[in-house]
Length: 239
Image (cartoon, rainbow, N blue to C red):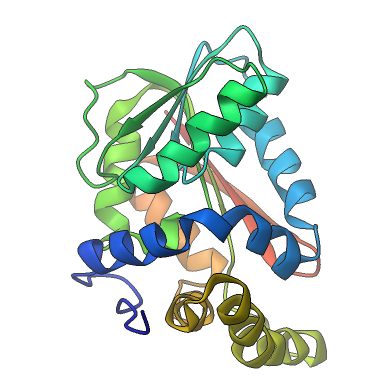
């Protein structure tokens, strides 16, 4: 498969994203480790600390994929109920295998991030790790996060912002646009998926703009950059 979804906000890309992730599901975890040089584990730890800081009883991990982040959350908060939601069944199947192998009790359910199948105020914390930029409509996704959060609840988004200006940003941009697609294509057999990845990052809002979208949704928002700005954590508290 070489076709790839469109990138950016307000794009009709749901089915294309679904097909793309279904095709790379078996190699997805290996690729994450290889392509991030293992640094993504530290990013997830930092995001999990933010998500669990208020001692939530119920946590929803949106766009959970193969459930890496949902498993991290449950490991750190064994007493919390953790649900992972994704619209790619092949990814969820791998997540269930991982959870069973590690004897970790989480629920993994099919669901559309833009129309979450949960009542208003259902969760104390909502997380999304490296899946938000794949949403077809960022504002609608944030509105759904806000809707299903209880008052005082917290949303945490871990994502790749566009590379920043300067030497390091230029180096990262070259790696992202030229090296990563080659490695990803070789390992996964899907060059299109790993061309989509850098394109989707370059089309993603700058951190301050994403923070503005979160504030417009009704969140009290802050963010911080990780590893020289390669990743960013946005925290939104529902007032």
